[in-house]
Structure formats: C-alpha cells, structure tokens
Amino acid sequence: MAQHDPNVEAEIRETPPEDGWRCFERTGQARATCPCGLDTGMVPVSLAWGTATAHHVAAWP
Image (tube, rainbow, N blue to C red):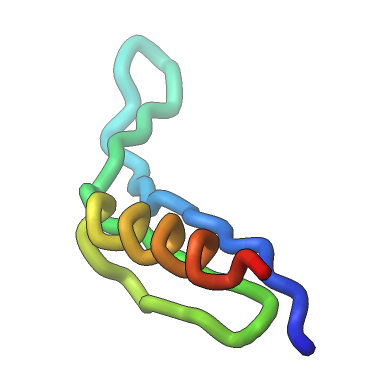
C-alpha cells in the first residue's frame, strides 16, 4: 500500500526588484501531490488545499 503524505506547494513568480531587493509574489496557483501518485497539476490554491485535505482524510485507515 502506498504511503500517504499530501503536500501543497504554492507557485510564486519573481517581480522587478525594488530598492535593490529581489521581489516575489504569489500567483494564486498551487499543486497538491502525494507519494501515492496524486498530482493535481497547477490549480487555484483553494482547490489544491481542498484536494489535499480530502485526500488525507480519505486515506486514514
């Protein structure tokens, strides 16, 4: 049986520097993955979190 440990990784992108500092912003997209093979691809953050949470709850024995 596959091990379940869902993970959500939010996408960020680099924006033009400000005052010599590198800047980043969230894109609003994220990816939910699990070692068992779950992979949502890039979807809205709320959908990625919802999918990972539902997957984790469903995987409990």
